[in-house]
Length: 312
Image 1 (tube, rainbow, N blue to C red):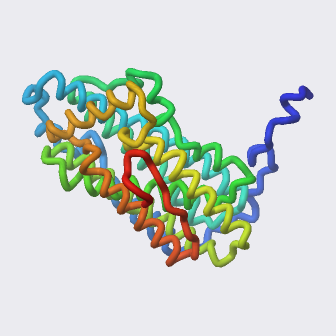
Image 2 (image 1 turned 90 degrees about the vertical axis):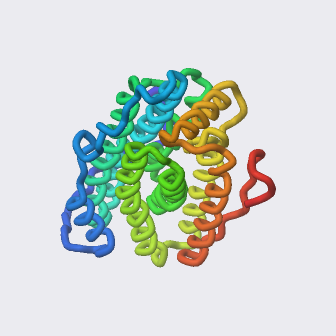
């Protein structure tokens, strides 16, 4: 064995499979209900969006290009989420978690795939899907938020992964989605956003239901590890521009993405701008902090960012 191999940290993939005994009874009713709700509320990006209402010829070349980039970027993020679910499914199985979780995440994978497809179709309708950022500097902000690595790391408690991914990152994304629906006038863009948001409601509800069922059983050390994972997600991912370009580190790529968002917003085809999104983002972080303290006794620190005045 090489020295490099001996230094490689083990992951849960190195542990023997632990599938049996296989219990399928309801263990967390709230999550089982979310699973049934997801199976009965399916939608098809090809047929359930009224694409006939979107006429690209009504927009300038600059507007079409910006909107193509915006919706392509949304597709990149949604595509990344597709691989989160299998990684977490492996973790659920290795830790012999409640079957409700595994059942729900089979549908979550399908829903994230649907979200990627509908964003791809939106970009295609506007002139063509764009496969990658124009400037590679922006890839560090939009490529990944590290959940797959966290999910396979036995040193990170599963509760920390779910709290960071769902109860922090997805809650912020949910609040921004609601904001986008409120400010987006084009009926097709708004319909796409509403369709995605209907699924995201369940995703967020899963996170809180799971955590509420687990927090009473965690040690102080485990609760501290959960808190660390949440803080890492907010400081190193959200405040690095994963969902919002204006939060990304200053460079030419960031400026280009911000301009893309502004042109798309002005055209009414989705997106938002810093001055509108900033109060939504701040309020979202404050709400998450308050809810986590009230529900779990976890106290998040105040955060800072050069684009936001004061601590929040």
